[in-house]
Length: 119
Image 1 (tube, rainbow, N blue to C red):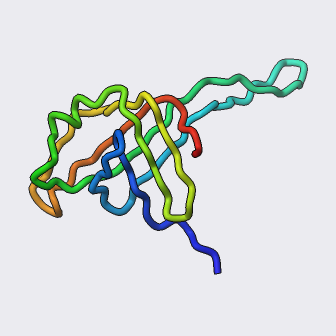
Image 2 (image 1 turned 90 degrees about the vertical axis):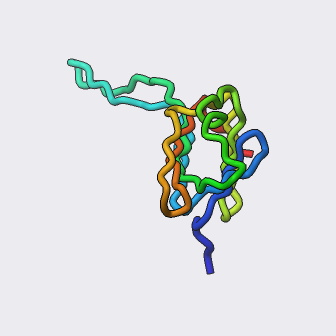
């Protein structure tokens, strides 16, 4: 029987986030766009794309929204329960965090940086 991705553990500078189900990672890299020439040749152009981790975290007494807002040049870890591990060095928080007082104080996070490395 095969095991499929069901959970992810996300860390920021080695500290595990209280992430809720549904976290995602876009590992970034190179985006290729098709280019068709008048003579019928088809090729592509390339554009570098950042990585991105999106998740919701639960707020507890140790959660600092101000610290999350100021994340810059942090290391993000994204470990899948199927064994894959990705690291984004030099990452940052994209938006100021907004906590909602229900369902564990859900705070949506979007973190970005250079393309992720598989470790």
